Image 1 (cartoon, rainbow, N blue to C red):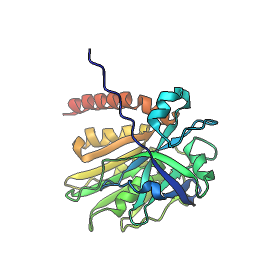
Image 2: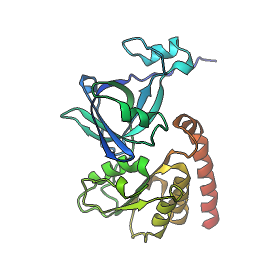
Image 3: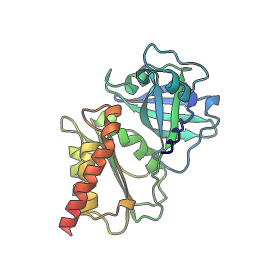
Length: 282
């Protein structure tokens, strides 16, 4: 049997923290810059994301930082872990990359880091990835998500074609989590309060009277409500898969490592369930 070729290890970008800003009680902004971003660029997608690299506590890595060397020389438990964040904005002239972090006190890895990181600190990351952008030929657009999807939704709203018909729903904890977005589209802010995550969002999208014509939809956030909205759009409204960007960014009770390990099987199961439901409904 021929040996499988070695998996290519991507070269990370290196940047420095330019500034930080508290946007709302649960959203922290970190702006990165520096010469290390000379080769960084993004395309037309509005859901571009990067994977931040967080080193294991107490471990010093050789310089220059080399992921391939680290994987060869260090035990797996000492490899840097990744956390995925949407690019809120990229300024190619200033070469500044803006990332927004949902924070819940000391919970998690990236949120607490974003709260304490200082100007000048070095940040390494992989990317960008991304695939969605508003389709200028669509008759109307649907954007729906929770806080984790807000950076991508905001970037998408700011990139909408002039005069586009857009319905945007964002579920947040309360009024003080609303943000100003440089767009003429009126965002429907859904205040969660003590309700389960996604409940208000599913209700709002279900209550929407869908206009005629082809929709371009972006639905992201907690996997449980995304599953419900996927069924609503794919099965009940019969929207073709190619018109949808829909995925669970995270899942209750799982950190990113656990969710990413289970995500492929979860998505396959959801697709199978909904294909069956769609066949029964037709």
